[in-house]
Image (cartoon, rainbow, N blue to C red; front, side, top):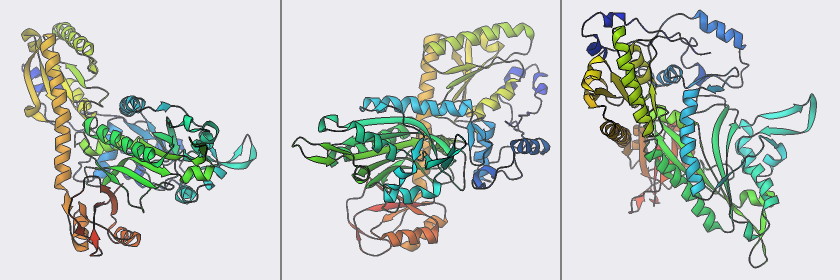
Length: 548
């Protein structure tokens, strides 16, 4: 159930002869809501293992809480701000089972934009979509030792079906490497059947103990790619190709400057030989693992007997990869670009790129304003720009300004009686608040308007990326000793330094600082350095950070 939205009355804004002008420079309007629980961190701190309260009780509790609050500023409580934005921008709501969420239409539209782009890239690189069952025999999970060890604490099991005890318990899909291999053994016989490259868009269940909407929930949506190859070189090339696809997507579509690299052995996916990752810095400077690509080697093919006959007539185990990106990327977009006014969406992924807000004071002005507004909408739509005309007269223009800013729409077009007379519109940028982001007198002549809007959308896309790069670079500290690393982490920053330490050394860092090796970046300095922990030679630098 969505919390109700209440905005202060804006009727006073219409009392002045210069109302239209004043509407464009309205002061901050508080967003006032009933909080969901006594703690704003209820979702992120809840235990999935605990018994959930009855839905009716939860709804009643929400209704009984009447104290108002504004959106929590990011600088005051980042987690509370994040939860507020998800609620107020209508991205998701709480499911009746603790740790689950309902993705609302606007949140799902962002996920659809991610899907639309990646689906094209997957097909361009030779992959086909298909679908595997959600239920997996438990014996499949047990076949790969490190895999079952890594996933056992997160498994959701089905033991009863049709009112009867099952002969073998079933796992609700945590990932699909096992069932994929079971099917690959039936489809792959000869080298002529390779490479086999598929992808599926699906839901996944992992019984997380502490959850956070979009970032970590019991059930989430993702795509998972699976490929089988005749030799290790092809598998490695595939794993690298897909992390490159993710990296370009993050930079070019989401405007998130991820750092791509290799995971440490400790952080490698259970059952993989190597894991590649893209790591993003969020607004609170924590790291978000935004996408991964795994070179599985022959670990799963040996466990499942996935073999083929090579060109010399010899039986060989296939080499495999798997790679995935999930709805946690939506959380990454929120935490990278959002501000105290709400979402700030990169235009290429925004469900709406432009919102048109018509403004009139007198009934006699309404028809003329709406006629021009409708014409502008048609012009932009014909140019493949995603646009909405908010012509409802149930809300004031000022309310609409705040509402669509909360939703992160990149551009707002305002049209009032004076604009109708001058055959122009006013354009406001979401990424530049106040008067600085507002431009008057943009001609409604189609060629001029479309060109201007497209240019501004490109500028916003680039601006968001540049802003995120600057923030990331300011918050990475190069270190050469363990003391320097600890100091950087204490400051809430990322630490980058030479590393050749052991797994035990890595776990010591995690235990003492809370930070982990996020990756060994692909971009490395050429000179050999000294390990910050052991003093031994180190050929690589690693990035350490606290993470989600």
